[in-house]
Amino acid sequence: MDNFSRRIGLTATVPIQKESIDDALRNGGWTIVYEFLRDGVEPSLTGYEAPRWYGKAGQFIRSIWINFFKLSADSISWNPDKDIPYLRKEFFGFKWNKFYDFIEYFVSLEDDYNRKQLIKSFNKIFAQENSAYRFVNEKIIEKISQNEIESVEATQHLPSKSFEHIKKSSQFLFDRETPDYRNSVKESISALEAFMREATKSDKHLGDILRVNNLDWINAHPALKIAIKDFMTKIYGYSSDESGIRHSLKDKHRDITKEEAWFILVTVSALMNYIQSCVK
Image (cartoon, rainbow, N blue to C red; front, side, top):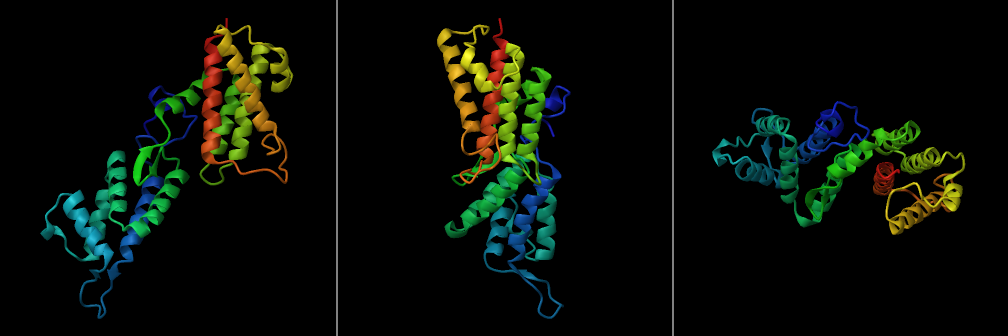
């Protein structure tokens, strides 16, 4: 997978599939396509004639052959046992961008009523396999930018304790089997706390550090320093409130989404990177 860390010879902190697709993502996409098409196969009744397409599946095949592959109509065999293997061979040969082109086109062939369910199925695979892309308003768009990825990757240059918390946050967030968004947020905030402890030579909690420190050691505009301190105070408060992110779960806790955990991870990473660059 070609990503920022591999290009500069490092192991990726953020295992996002951007401008790339691995076997799990490709297999997941193909399973959705295959199962949809197999539902439109009419098997041989006697065993002597070939199976054939019927209903929407046949319409999909014709559109894919003529409009996506740009092949002639007479190249369609109309035998699912031949057409599906051909389509599979093409699908598994797609580059990452063609993979998404095909899925977007495939979804566009479905009627309005069923298209939402098909989109939901693809988005579930994209999220599960950590794709940087999602269907939004029936179009596949980039949901995680290269700048966001690089911001998190750049934390490797921060003090080791902060970077270790960032790595743990990423691992919780992008675990394909059992993602843990609550602990991802907790580790992101812990990274910020460790960073501020190192910067101020303190062993206090982040909230206590911020109450007595005006960030005079940061070379930034006074108004910006006030804004940074205010943001850190509020994000620490967010993580320590009754939702229980940094504490045991309580009756009033709410679920943390993947998008929320990613926002916190990127924002905290960018903030620490900026402060590091402004130390006097």
